[in-house]
Length: 258
Image 1 (cartoon, rainbow, N blue to C red):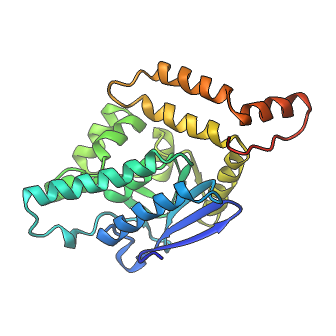
Image 2 (image 1 turned 120 degrees about the vertical axis):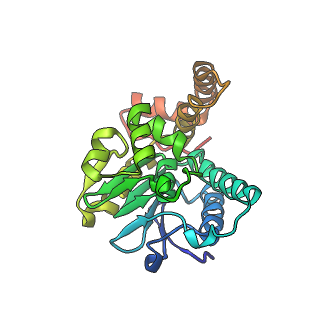
Image 3 (image 1 turned 120 degrees about the horizontal axis):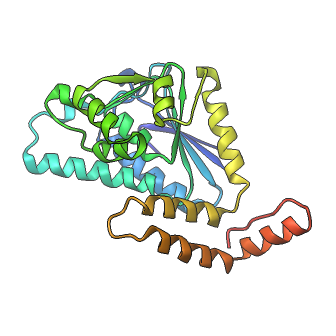
């Protein structure tokens, strides 16, 4: 089904492995096409409640874009390339189901941008993050200048973007770029543990949280108004009725997403 991805569905969690280990899982046109298609699968497959994105092999999550594809691009073609990457990563960011990045090894350039487009990140202790595009005389093109600021603040983002320096897993944790740091052999287990916990919650509520939190960063969107509207919609749902009934009856709720 996919040229560059390996997928497996277990316990309503879709694990997506970018499978180009000989290229350190670098992003090329085929990877972007597959990521776009898998985003559609996540949204449309009712058996999928959450997803994890990781990279094949111990060395890299995604070590960057495939620079071989950049040669000879015109200004118009380069802008189109950037826009396509931004649009696909926005689909991941705005997916109504949670997508967790499980970062093993290098997450550089487009790899860091992909990880940041996920709803949150878990790193193995050998992970390294960075936006080294300035070393090539260019800037990030897939949302890196925007999402890095959101996650770690303007000052540190400016420093990392302008120096091209990498940060290790522990520094990424202290900056708020990742949520957890674990041993490499515990990476997927930790990601699945968190995804499994989220899967027990109301799916409409999870969708509402993603929508409202992302709405905070959208120009022209009143985040408080969006929250109030989403709260009202959820209060009129079957999931809310089930959740409150289960609370009163001292049992676990069985959410149906309606």
